[in-house]
Image (spheres, rainbow, N blue to C red):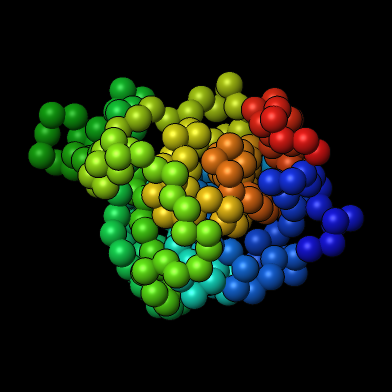
Length: 259
């Protein structure tokens, strides 16, 4: 990657104002771990992304960007995909199952799924037919973190240095994670995820010094956690406003890393 093409770069973090599907700035076979939460296609107000595609178009978009991720990963690279279990807005769809199937069709191997209990059922506003069997909605206050890998699950590349503690390992290998989501207003992004989510994925599935990529970097959560945990973070973000937001967060939260 040419330094001049980076929106922001320091010793541990690179932010690229680039489109995940068309960028040429990430080298094939260069990434150890991808941690990302793609747009959910539920009509959120992003600046530069249309979040109300038809479901068929959304699945086609998914094939395109996941194909790039497959290209960028090393043979023993891992892919942590934070997606909804399902969605009801615009018609019920089995998003988690459909996106997992697409990933496998592309060539990813399936390892496991973490159920993230956000505990935000109080935010729901729709029940379908209230107290009636006519047409009730069932809504689970959870999201998924689907764990995939490219060719081999056993990691052979990298420093071989793990920094996960005994208690973290025991707690996080339990496939139900319970912690709160992140505030949109506090962060200034329509769909931020909390630092805890990438932190767990990074410490569980990568070594110190590994390269961690987020192709939908948004407010920079993944790359910030990569830097704070002695990894190298690369964030792709199509919207310049969110690139500026992530740069500001990086400079605020990662004070010990000199530009």
